Length: 230
Image (cartoon, rainbow, N blue to C red):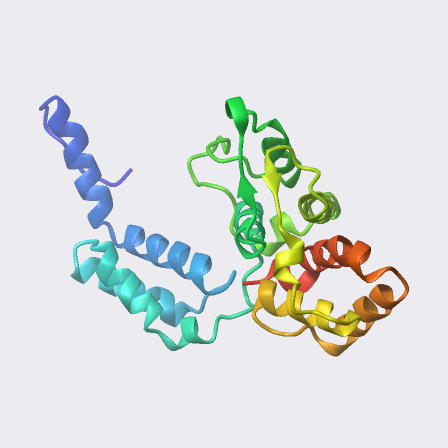
């Protein structure tokens, strides 16, 4: 298909083919597009893809040089909030921001795997060689979003066996409904929620016992559209 002839040589035949594929101009473009899609936006500009492809070719595929170019680009600097988290990204970020402690006795991680299965991304289970999709349209389905919401509430309510979250420690400085919403928003997302979403959660918190409603507020923030973006 490439119009190339590889002479007999056992293992070297495969190595020659890999070298030829790696040096092909289309490979540089595909790698550049995949990296830009992963770190910047679902539909990266032709300019950033071409720039990364050029660096790929000139550096002989040196990933550090390519990533340095990507992370120094204006497109990357303006990329905050453009990417929808894949399920595993969402799962890890939720565990991290809540300070979740994992104690899987006897390697019993069935519930964690079940949540990832419902969300659609158990590691190493994607059969095609192209890897899990990295675009919003594939993951922002009704069932996928519901699975994220269920995981968020299960996490904050302590319903996942072997996983615990110390919400009182996260909200120890919060003395009012507004404080609870703002403290958890800043903890989870680095900023206060937009006014419309904040007002809804504050009203919800005011209508319930403050101490008992904290797991619900935390889970709703994690399951909100605002936490789904990175």
